[in-house]
Length: 297
Image (cartoon, helix red, strand yellow):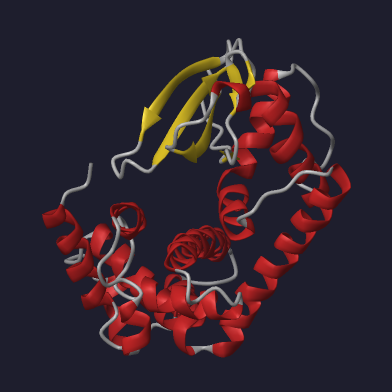
C-alpha cells in the first residue's frame, strides 16, 4: 500500500511540474487518494519537466481535463508521442548521414535544422546536442523537455497530435460497435494500442503459426487482433497464471501466459465479487474487468 509520506512526495513533484498552471488544475491533485497517487507516481517516471502541462492541453482537447486519471493517461500519451517523434527523427537523421551528395558540414547543418524543426531547439540547444561533454541521457532529457514545450505552445503541432488521437479512437469506437464490445476508457485503449500494437500483431502471427498479410499494420487489422483475436488466444483457463494486488490496494491485475510465453494482463477493481457473479470457473473475467492487453514475450 502506498503510504502518506509517498503521497506527499508525489503531490510535491506534481506541484513543481504544474507551477505555470491554474489553481483549479492544481486542486485536482489535492488530498489525493492512494489510487490516484499511485497512478501519478507511475506515469511521472520517465516524464520530462513539461509533460504534465502538455498532457493537460491534450486532456482539454478531449474534454477530460477535469479527470485526474485521464490527465495521467495523457501524460503517457505525451511520452508515447515523444518516442514516436524520436524514432522518426532517427530515421531521417540516418538518411541524411547516408547521403553521398553532402559533405560533413552540410550533413551536420541539415541535422541541426531537423532538431529545430522537430523539437523546437534554440541555437544553444543545438550546440548542446553537438557537445561531447553532455551525456546522451541529458541530451534525451533536453529533447523530451523541448518536445513537451512544443506540444504546449505550438497549437499547430498539438492539433496534428490531437487529430491522430481522434482518428484512432474513432476507428476503435466504430470497431467496438461492430463487434459489440465496450471499452470504457478509449484514451487508455489508444495509449496501449499505439504503444504495443507492433509487438502484439507480430506475437499473434507467431503464436498461431500463421503467415502475416503483406501489410499487417492496417488499423482494422490491428483492432481485430488487439481487441479480439489476441484476447481470445491468451485469456483462457489454461493460460491463467496469477493475480496481483496493486500497491494502491484498489486494483488487481491478472496475468496470463501461453505455452510460448507470450503474456497478457487484465485489470479489475479490487472489490469482493459474489461467486454467482463470476464468469466461469475459474473465472475468465471479473465484472468491470479491463483487458489492458500488454502483450509481450
